[in-house]
Amino acid sequence: MSRKTVAIRWAVRLTLLAAAVVLALGGPLPGAIARALPSLSPLAAAASSLAQRRWYLGLAWAAPAVAVLALAVWKGRLFCRWICPLGTLYAIPSRLTLRKKLLAVRLAPLIFWIIVGGALAGAPLLLWLDPLSAFNRLTPLASGAWTAASIIAGVIVPLMLILGAIQPMIWCTHLCPLGYCFELARSLRNPGPKATFSRTRRSILAGLVLGIPAATAARKWLFARAGAAETERPILPPGAKDLETFASACTRCYACVNACPMDILRVPPPLGRAPGQWFQPEVAFLDSREAPGRGYCLETCTACSHVCPTGALTPLHLREKRQRRIGTAEVIRPACLAWADNKYCMVCQEHCPYGAIRSDESEDYIPRPVVDPERCRGCGICQSTCPARRAGKAILVRGLSEQTVSDDGYADLFEYDN
Image (tube, rainbow, N blue to C red; front, side, top):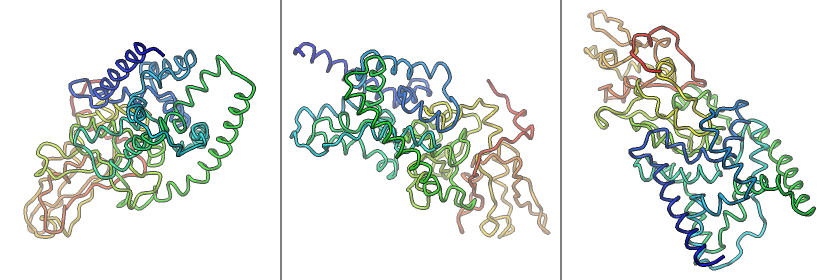
């Protein structure tokens, strides 16, 4: 390759890397742009669709992934060499590599087929290794929505940068399942020599033989606590189906975390979570005094559901969002000013946008809050604004094992756009 071609290639790669950063961060761009980068992955699209037993992408969002796959059929790993932002990042330290061999065996084919086999069994193990999702995983660091757990989940990128300084392009050449997907697509057009076909066949058989049984056997362990007591269930972003489906389909790209205007989507520590739920984004309500005007799930916001690239969150219209129950509030009577101290405090009722809190008067005619679970959506504004401090918040939202729709007619009182 001539110096001129190399210079042009690096100019293109660096320009596209900068564009990928802008797409991931969103900035002044439309919120849905946050899903543009991970949506390019045909591997994530196919594995998530297989795992959920449905094709979740609409025509507009399916087109980029299909185009990338068609490019691979035509030119193999051209996407890797010219477009992939993570490939560009990994190529930088590889120019000054020590050229030592840390990994001799190529694991990419096995990883790819384990993902496919796991998806067939309903749990696409190792899908979080998709490189475009891994790149997008860095965005909470720039947006300020990061947590210690999100840093741990994103450690694969700096780790591979370090390893790439020892063995050049170790991720791209030995580990990347998306890169192998492109090679496989290219082989459809040009199968290559018989030896190559035999290696491909062996990797398919090995991956499926390992992937399907491993996913089937691991499901019980991965989601052992997914049906835990209600007080321990996480609150998932609006648009999630159930705990297990969300955990399986989510690639931890954190597009939803970056898109949330109320700053309530966070990546919690894995302690107390089923292994299959580690590092997934969850709802964490904030105190209104620390986050004025934020801290709860706004009834007029559907941002997170529209940026998910894998269908782990179903895109919701405003009416659907206002009918979606993501949790149920519970009054903690020993901590409540009205129930425990017989003082007037109905702040939770005053703020509830769904009319889900009614009053139960005491003998002294002091109103005390009571939650109507059929009307409560779990938006968390009651928890966020609750002024009780002595024994913690006096009203808390509990997660659900499966999000439901409340058809109580209350959403009809809102003005909404579809």
